[in-house]
Image 1 (cartoon, rainbow, N blue to C red):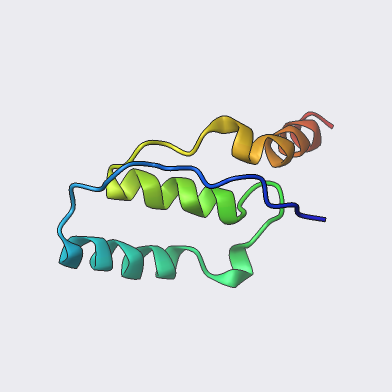
Image 2 (image 1 turned 30 degrees about the horizontal axis):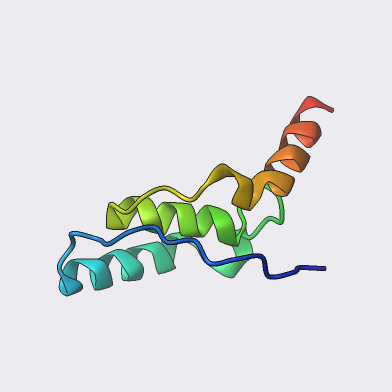
Length: 77
């Protein structure tokens, strides 16, 4: 079960509002629900892609540590 931990400030984007909206439209096409995977392509991965596209600070590694560990274990098996 998910337990809220804290908000993470990723800074401010230098993009204009129109550019940010275009980014969200592009990502909406790339991140459809059919491609969701709990450990390899989840909501934190989407947030990382969004933050990178917005040129904000990266999502801290601890945010997705459980899924990253599960993904590494699955790949090793």
